[in-house]
Length: 180
Image 1 (cartoon, rainbow, N blue to C red):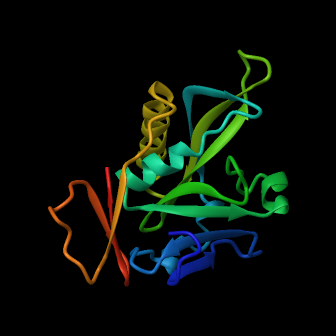
Image 2 (spheres, one colour):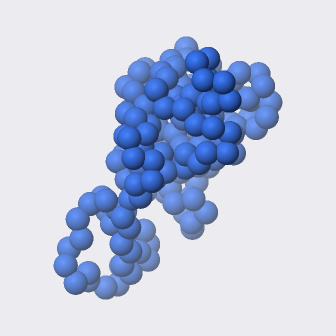
């Protein structure tokens, strides 16, 4: 959970231009990710497009609910302009990490629709194809219902919920979050 106590961050390139932010309870293999961006890049593009001011942050929410491997990637301007890493929003885009593989939400100008941007995923590492496909699947789900919000119920860890809520459980030191 971004900004919460226990969040970790690590750079994954030799010039320290790209940083991953993740929770302490996520099994991130920092050593396996070093230099992953130097590996061959896989790009997968969805059919979803957005206008310049159209929000797409619910994709991140969908990924968080659907996949425990969701982290945040941050790339500084030099990483973006050099082509090293181009997340959709350089300071805060969702990404998936699995062992020594990484994929993140990316964006490009649409060739077919002037004034629109196409959403996709870029990945590196041995499982890049699987991770990019996973992100694009969630982009497609978001595109079918762009206003759908995940449902969140939070309980202090010191209490027992009145009934066991359904959905994904994220346990933090002081709170249990149930997401559906």
